[in-house]
Length: 76
Image 1: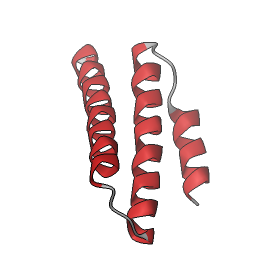
Image 2: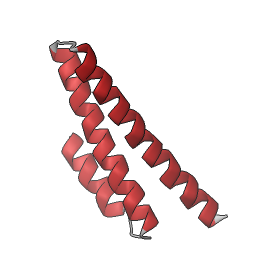
Image 3: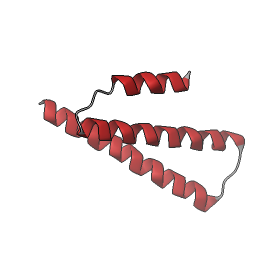
């Protein structure tokens, strides 16, 4: 059961990374502008990086507590 949970966690994180890349490409193609959109794109890029790191750490069986603490620090 633990391996199923980890595989699901990794799959969801990499799906988020994929969809964040899609949203970034759509943003570039449509050339939309605005401050709110700018900060939304930054937030999406940050989420993409964090989800990518979480997925890689989960594959390598590393502890994610330090990563979670670091991202909480960055957000505050």
